[in-house]
Structures are given as C-alpha cells and as structure tokens.
Image (tube, rainbow, N blue to C red):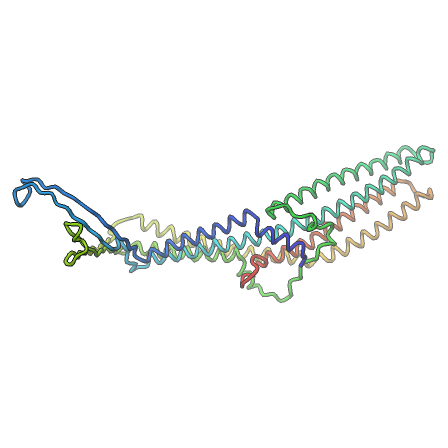
Length: 412
C-alpha cells in the first residue's frame, strides 16, 4: 500500500537481472516444448538431386561403356515415427510440464524479489531511524559531558564522573558510525535488487513513513497454498516424472517409422517435370526390441524418480504450512511485544528524567544516570527492531501465502 515502495518494486521487476534470467529460462523451456511437440508431426522436405554414373563395358548390357545421368525432384518425409504406443506423446507431456515448472520458478523468483525489495526497504527505514536515535543520543551525551566537564573544572564533580560521561559519548559515537555503515549497505542492497540507483525521494526516512501492508483477512482457506509457485512447480515436476514412466514403458513396444517420397525423375533435365516422369517411394520400418536390459534399468530409474518427485511435492506442501504457521506465530505475539516494549520505553524514560533530576540536586550519583541512559537507549533501539519485525512479518505473510508473485490473473 506504500506508494514509494510500489515504485521501487516496479523498478526492480523491470531491471532486476536475476528475474530477467528467470524469464529467459521460461522462453527456453517454451521453445524446447515446441520442439518436442513438433516430433508428433512428420518433417516434410523438398529435395532435388543430380547423379551421374559410369558403367564399364564388361558390366554393361550392351557390351559398351555407358554413362548415365539422372535428375530427381522429391517431396517427402524421412523416418517419421508413428506414435502408436505413446512414447513421443509422453515426452511431449514431460516437456510441457517442465515448461510449466519453469514458469512457476519464474513466479517464485518474482515473489522472492518483491518480498526481498520490501524487506530491504523496511531494513533501510529501521536503520535510518536507529541512526537518528543514535545521533540524538550522541548529541545529548555530548551536552551532558560538556556540563560535567564544566562542573569538574570548578571541582563540583569527581574525575570518575567525567570519565563515565566520556564513555557514554564514545559509545554513542561508535553506534552512529555503525548505523551509518548499515544504512549505506542497505541502500546498496536495495539498488542491487532494483537493478538501478533508487532515487533519494523514494527512500524512507524512518519506519513511521512507511504505510504498512494490508492485513490478511481471517478465514483465508489453506487451499491458497496450492497456488504457491514452489508447490505448483513441484506438482509440475511430479507430472513430468509420470510422463517419463509412460515414455520408458513405451520403449518395450515396437517402434514403427515411415519414410515416403513423391516426385519426378528423368534422365534429362528438360523432361524432369513432363508427363510420365512421376516417381514415388514408400518404406515403412518396424523395430521390435527383443533383448535390451537397459530398458528395464531405465524403467526402474524413472519409477524411482517419480517417487522422489512425490516426496519433494509432499515436502513442499509441508514447508508451506510450516512457514505460514511461523508467520502466524509471530503475528499472534508481535503486537503484545511492541506494546510491552513501548511501555518499557516510557518507564525507562521516566526513570532517566528522575535520575537526572536527583543527580542535579546532589541526591544521587551519576552512575544511576548512566545506567538509566543506557537502559533508555537500549529500550528505544529494541522498539525500533520490534516495529521493523512487525512490518517484515506482514511482508513474509504475503510471501508464504504465495501472494504478490504476479500482478494479474489467478496467480495473485
């Protein structure tokens, strides 16, 4: 639902090289399927030829040396297999299912790309918010250090308080540097996924700037998992394995092929297409397997592959349910965790204010102030992480349900 994020995702769908490679694999599989499907049809070709031969006198019927010339023009099919036992049809079905599996692999790659872009976008927003928090903390620590330094110079506070304040400043400086590194890496990752540099005006400043995804409605049936790209890919590969069994079984039966040609033939080129020069050939052939132990091993191999495909299909369904269950487990508790963390931040912030007030009045030591500062900073960073986890889980929920892989059709 976030318009800027939608634009970044649209750019990635256009420019991402991994997705482009997946789309090219689909084109390759489609072409291979076309080749296998065409095997059901005869290959018609036109041929023209000229031949000359010389017969010695002792082999000639006339007792004289002879030179003969022959011209041919034919239209026909060579070695066209008649698919009585379904071998070629099974191979065609296998190529079709492999093509469909490749298309599902493309959808899976697209779904992964969409969720990866969304997660990288959210990670950048979270790290930028953490960077702002670290910078704000550093500024307050530097101000506190400057105040204590002045008090130390006039002998009001001890040297120990001065060094304690210095440690907080140095810690905050280290955190600022770390989050600057993380935000730069997040931008690099987002640019890589998008396939180009994402404009600065599309990048989020903090998590609050990101519109959260819509919630999945309660009552969504588990049958939507059957439309997940990885599940459908496994199903297609199972169908391809079944087709392999049909092709392997057909290898036990005779193979019938036909070669036929029709055309003209003449000893003189100018009479090649005149009346009475018609010629034809018809040569059926049958090959009956009598003893070939390889066919039995091949049949056993494809049956084993089919069992493997069944196992992989069942595994993909189990993985789908596991991933959805994990996402639901996070969804069921993340709101309570965010609420508890927000309450913790409020309580620690109040503790920090009271500790600072007590220290300013000389009631308490600076150690309690430092402890409250550390606790507040840690609680604020934890809140950012939990808010990020909540949004990221919503993205993952869509992904594990198989949504977002396509923008049209029933595959949404």
